[in-house]
Length: 310
Image (cartoon, rainbow, N blue to C red; front, side):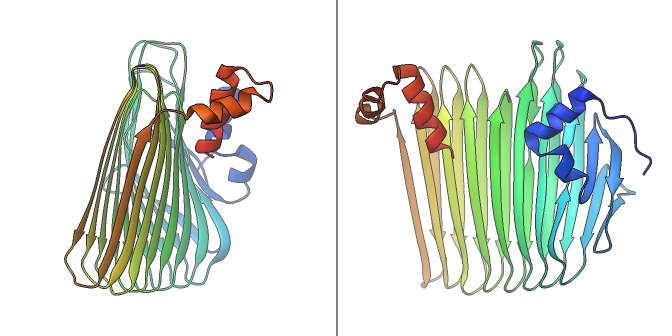
């Protein structure tokens, strides 16, 4: 792919969700305003443009170790509705890190929206660390909208750790993650979200533990302030001898609203499933302790929130 112009604003957005230096030292594909603008492959990682729809296929060879793939998306124009399908084929016994995410800069009046549908196919023994960051900025009245979908299909002995972070500035998001696990697999999901103003965020997790000794751990931490709204929904199906734990912890301030619906469904006598959900305000003793160290109440709240989402 011929490289197209990346300006200072583009680089700033890319650095918010990753690092432009790190991106160009690995296999990568940069997408801007609905089209690919830069790409680089390696001996073990190939990136191919789809022929039937918008998106790319990423092929990772078996036994690939300690390599990275970056697939950032940036939007800098108003009125863009970008829909992309990216499929990852991760070879046997490979061990890789994949970094995705989207940054939106909107100084205008029309909405900007990115919907990314990512599917991961992990072969036997494959290991993936998947990092996804979402960020919005700009002084315009146009909304920054992100709707990521992640589907993970795991074969015997594979594992995946997914870290998903909504940094700030996203007006509306529906985030859906689906996992289908075969035997001896492990899927860990860490989600961190902060909303303010009148922002809305909905998270949906659906994990099917089909194989013996499959396991998952879903951890969601969120902070909702002002008049923002958050919805958390988790459905875990224990269809074999398996283990699952779902945790949802939220801090709520001002007039914000948070709803959590963690559900576990045991369809096998040896399914071991646990869920926890907690929603509440910042504890008074935490504020008092930090304020005795000289922090203002506002600064103390900021430090507590920062530690909670770390």
